[in-house]
Structure formats: structure tokens, C-alpha cells
Image (tube, rainbow, N blue to C red; front, side, top):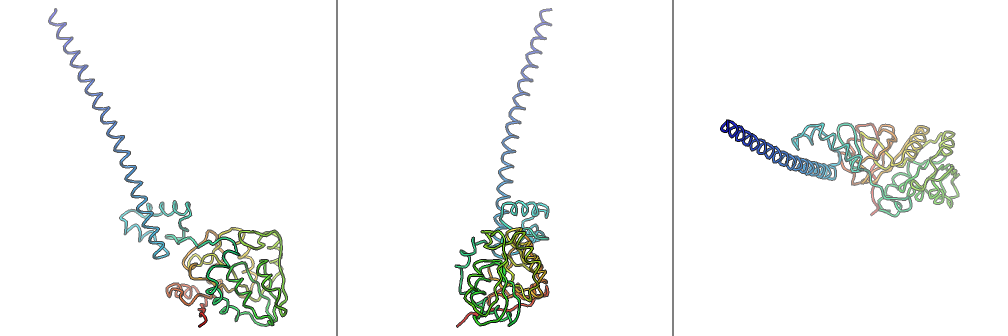
Length: 300
């Protein structure tokens, strides 16, 4: 009887040891899996950062990036790249377009601040643009620092009607006696430097300009002309649709970029005036979309 009890105690002790060992193994396994999971997360985060860094480099070097090309280069799925691009777009690092992404259009702040940037380049664009303003025309001059340079370049004795929604442009035209000047109104959007709200849109609906000189924050053959502010894009679309002809003078830093809000397709712009150094690929893409491209030549 004593031997049986001793045997049972021994068996119970052995089972306890096995249970303790089993629990210890599970505890160590869970600790290992926790550390391994953290490692996988860190590795995944590192790969994600590396992918986004490479995508950012490609955007800076090439402009437009395509999800299919990035997926092939990075050996990941297109779904992974599309997710990366969505996250980057949400963070303001790029602008999503069909099949890929574009660099964000440059935003240099207020109209007066933008007017102080590269004035000689904008003056060259202005000289190439004013030739499209003919005697007797009704012309709409949209908000924009290049359009301000165009206003300054208009000959004082030109007989035409100039309509604008931009006080700085109206001021530049005040001392040109040959012009009939119309300033459409309503609340002023300080970021845009112009009136773009409901009152300005009602005024614009009464116009039928011969020529609209349209401002643009970004320009791409597929994305079209784009703007940073929704209401500004809405106003630009309206005045472009009311005009017989549309011209956009665009500095090279805006080419191949996009802002968040679509204005018009490239084929809706009759003429694009670009800098002499505009990339040939961009010129070819714009021409293929049906736009007439004119290159501005610097003086001297």
C-alpha cells in the first residue's frame, strides 16, 4: 500500500514537473513571438519608409511615377504601391493621378510674395503673352503672379477692356489710359489674392471674354491645369467656360505637377505660353493633347 502511494506521489510530481516545463516553454514561446512580431513591425515600417523615400526621390527626379513601374522596381505588388501613394497623398507629399502620382505643385504663399519670385522669368512669359491681347478685345485677367506681370506689360495706349477679380492686377492697370477696366467683386480670398466667391461667380456669369488669361498652380498633360483651393478652381472653371479662348502662361517649376483641385483639361486651353527651357517631353505631351505651345524668349 505504501509503495502504491509513493508511486502515485512520484507520478504526481512528474506531472507537475512536466506542467511547469510546459508552462515555461509556452511563456518563452510567447515572449519570443512578441519580440518577433515587434521585429516584423519594425522591419515593415523600415521597408515602408524606404519605399516612400525612393518614391519621393523618383517624384523629384522624374516627375510622374507609375504604380506598375514602382511595383516592378521594388518587387512588391501594385496594391502595396497604390496604398503607399494614397498615404503619401494624404500627407501632402504627392498628388494621386490615374495609374500613379505627380509631385505637388509649388506653393509660394500670397500673391504679393509670389510676385517677387523669378520676376525676369515671369516678365519673359508676359512679353510672349501680351501679343495675344488685341485692340478692341474683352480680356479676363485671372489671379496669379505671372498674370500680374502680364498686366504690367500691357501697353498704356492699348484700347481694350480688361476684367479682373484681382485688386493687385487692377492697380497695375490703373495708369493705362487706353484700357476700360472692370474689377469684379465680393469678399477677397487672401490666400488667392482675388475675389472668387459666389458674388464674383455671379459677375463672371455675365461676361463673355474674347480671351481669358488663366492662372494655374500646376500643369500636367493628363491632370490638366489645377489649383490649390477648391473655390478658386471652381471660379477658374467658370470663367474659362465663358471665354472664347483660354491662354495660360506657366513657369517651368509648375510643369508636370498637380494641385488638389482640377480646373480644366489641357485641350480646353487654346494656348500654353511656356519658358524657353520647358522640357521637350512636356511640350510634346501638351501638343499631343491639342494645346498650342508658345515658348517665351528671354531678352538679350
